[in-house]
Image (tube, rainbow, N blue to C red; front, side, top):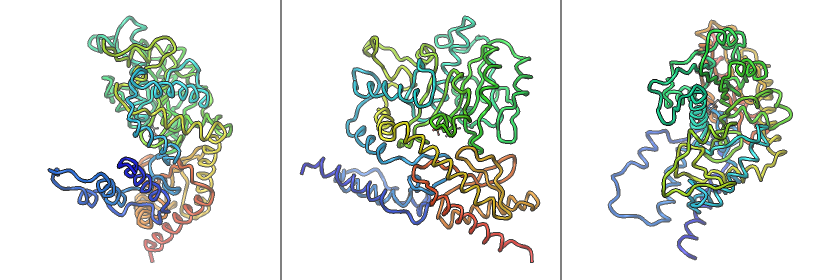
Length: 471
Ligand SMILES: *Cc1c(COP(=O)(O)O)cnc(C)c1O
């Protein structure tokens, strides 16, 4: 067998071994410092054998890996890296394509054309929209807002792409108080400032208050960008697009929606009412590596006005071929020139699951979230603080206790849950109080897994409350 074949076969064996070993614990045995100890050595002067390098990598890395690909990982919002997406990604790496343009990588550009069309169809967005394949929702927000910035200024006669923001007319940026932190980062990168925004009051679930919006709109004029949200990071709540977007459109605003995971509600008949009216926006940022289960990294910047998208992102040079009619240059829709061919894994996931499989995946995650919520809510002392309409849960322990005691009990329960390791989930602050957050975003989280998760949370809570109960 050739050296390449044995290297790749051994790599595939290691990968399969990792995925097939049912993790008894959902937390890594190595923390950062221990992992660093495994890798920390001076730059080697001499090289090492290919197989040895890969075997050592697997041996030293695996104890420091979270079971994010497992069925009971509920931390942050992290998709499961579906095996089919991973396999397509293996090939993507082996092929070594540079997805910058259609001449350097014809198949990568072509697959993006088709995957983009499928995504718009699945997510029920305007068919004329363009799609950039980016690293994730952070860069998708950046890309969409760059298009927004250029277009709202172009409408008042200012070319921001050529002249920047020096001396430009002011742009008003409206954003909900409970927007994701990465949207503020995107505004920062774009020279719009993360603090120079008008924040809009939100309701207890984190939705923009339409009255607060209407009041603010009475006071603003000129170039306007409004940033809405589908899927609040804690509660999973959606802004009321059907009510809000028409108000914004009456003011000629560019409406952007951060919908990293929430946009996928569009893909199921059971959840699409949550995102009703979202298609009237101008741009949408979403992830493949969350609900579509592609491996990391993969996100999509979707812009209704293709020309605005291209104006903001096109990279031109004499040595770069120009796409002709009907040809796609992937770099025209993203900040990078050279990059990974993310279209392959996206195409593979859409082809493997199909419209029905994706709807079933969304439904299963939401049903499992509801099941955990239902089981936990029966336990005295545990409260679910959000309306579980999607896949997110906000959980509070020690209801009935003074707030500080409830915070302490919640933090201790989270520690116990993590030490036990049957599931992984982490804490957050919601409305000033400590909470446990669960995000059900994995294709393997069935009803059985949801029951195991609820049991392990209740067991941890009971053991902590027994310890802390006053005698
Ligand atoms: C995850 C997330 C982001 C950031 O996405 P990345 O893929 O981590 O870049 C932005 N907004 C929301 C609502 C998210 O859930």
